[in-house]
Length: 309
Image (cartoon, rainbow, N blue to C red):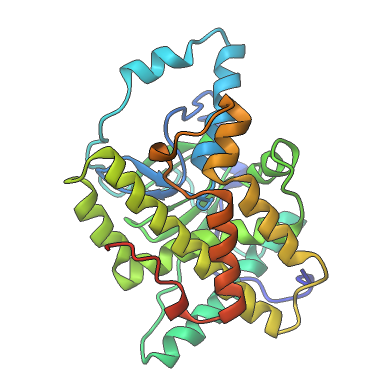
């Protein structure tokens, strides 16, 4: 992706220098993507992308520390209590542009998503309320509760912020073979897609309905929510390509990332078999298909995943 020298978003909150307090918290059993106050955490990007990938990583971390992950699972579950909005850290976030390559890259990608979604919303006669993106290290507090790096990237509807520990990109590349700057851009664009869903009313309705569903039905709806966010990320890629910012191989990087974090691919890799009723993010084929559908069409009406039937 041709990102160097381009404008960075002013909606970045960089608190990476304040991190580390929560490094011992693996976040096992919780994940990123969409974090819902009072409803636990729902994911992609990772979206979202955190839950499945980071659960695998956390499993081995816990085993290495002599902790039995299955014991944690046996005592876990349920829903989180409603948590009042909190500040992300005790200190104010750093202002001004990032000085490192990764920080600048994230700022440019977020700016490009703002350009695209502002344009789409304006065509519909609406304003696009831009999300904030918080870059953190170790742990972070949000309006949806506290999360560690192991939660992966997630979007919190309670404060309209995306939370990202960029070390996740190392995990994505080294453990799952999804490297490249556009694979990383796809992760960010997917989380922005959840923000768009929040603005247009998809996430609020999902949160209201999921508490009245069986686990299997809620998982099935979650899959449709995640696939729509993938499609929205594809729409962003379409317009970014139209501006001449994509390079050869960029779309392949995004499609490979979608392939590597599909529910079926993760389950085959980690347990050797697939349990479709446990899917909450979509198969590799589904994730690739819906990202590509958004990329090839550039149209919102092509991203109808029939979330609510």
